Length: 116
Length: 112
Image (cartoon, rainbow over all chains, first blue to last red):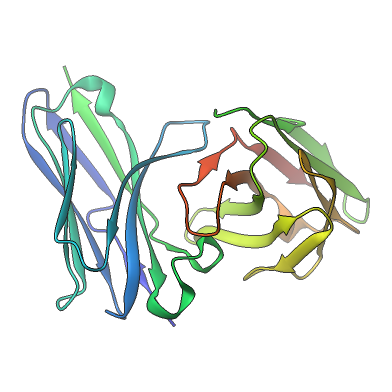
């Protein structure tokens, strides 16, 4: 069974710092990997989706990389801002799912706090 | 929240009572999902729907049933609520099975 781990569970940084969030998964046979953001009391917002054939995806100050062979993904946030404070979750789908969302396995998330 | 409304937003109920949560979307997306989120477990899929009257079980479907009689509405029913079903429930939608997910704001359910 696929397991997705996110370490650390919580991270606190000063504003302006560049930071990296980590996601690891036990089964490298994945179709894609997604990063989500969750604000307190809210649902998840999709940030980036990386197909298994890709190495990275970028959106603004966010860059997500994927290393399937080592079972790892990182989310890089440049020039962090207090508005980036949220919980960040990663999720993977298995290769035999065709990328179907109903096969998503989520990590438990990293709570990021960016201090002014 | 991408045209997704969950109701109620908060509910407190007693063990053994039936509970129905509603998810309403205005996006006309084909796929709808119900998840629960618990500390220590993360998000887990309960049921999903791939069209009107077409539903299937997810990872943690025991004790839950769903119905979808219209494209825009997906109902989650706890037939006889138990304390283990205290959780935050999220509805999500997507255009296709592997397309981007959009989430509602959640329903906080407490079963006493």
